[in-house]
Image 1 (spheres, rainbow, N blue to C red):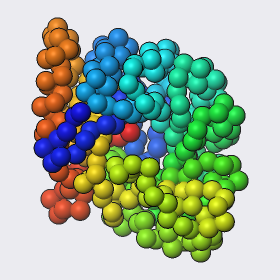
Image 2: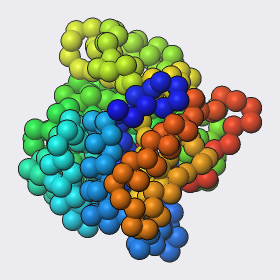
Image 3: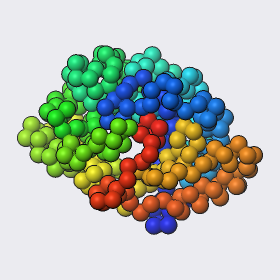
Image 4: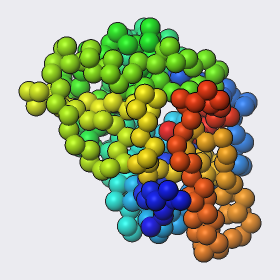
Length: 327
């Protein structure tokens, strides 16, 4: 099993398959066409499958397919099918904006995708267009309904909560979770925007969210599924619905982190907020054997940071925005 120098077991891999996205969300803003990573620099499906197999052989149990928007990569369902067949992989999921999901979800389920997390930062169609740059609110709702109908479980819906943008919708999101039967995840706004406009004043903390949502309907804490789970889970007191809050800023969970990331162009990142990347693609394309790649990955994991430094006065944001890092 992969273990870092602080004794944490690394069991979760975020595997980005593209830096491209069909949305331009205000908290991310992926690069515009012409500034995307050259396609030749992206890992091929064969390379991604090989890397996934190696990571699983080292103890990775869960792979989350990310982007950018992973569904904009052509034939990505064939890659997901290949990864789903890797012996020892326990959990295969995807983060998506759901714009194309309704058209692809049945095939994704058939090839082995187990569940999805869907980004939805507002329930107001006009505000949706302002946040994402796309007039496609109804398509995302259709994607959520299609995921539920296809039997993906659980269907999680994520919202990045930003003060004066969508913090007035917390109770609406809670109602949505109860009405739809989805697990809603509220995410504190993190400094990952390409324009570096993040400000602590725009962060709505876990405590604030709990206070507002509890006034609508009482909440009962739920135990984590695993010690490394990122979200603090709550059930409504009447048992109807679940929410979670990912409080990376106000309540860091670095001490239990089990995650590592691989960007679409083959760079390993040991933390979402790393300012250092490790070039696995160069080693892959130099003809390295599996044992050499395993040794490289073990060495990188050994350099995983003890914690992020968001709350330090000398914090430096990552050089890449979220669409390039991979969610």
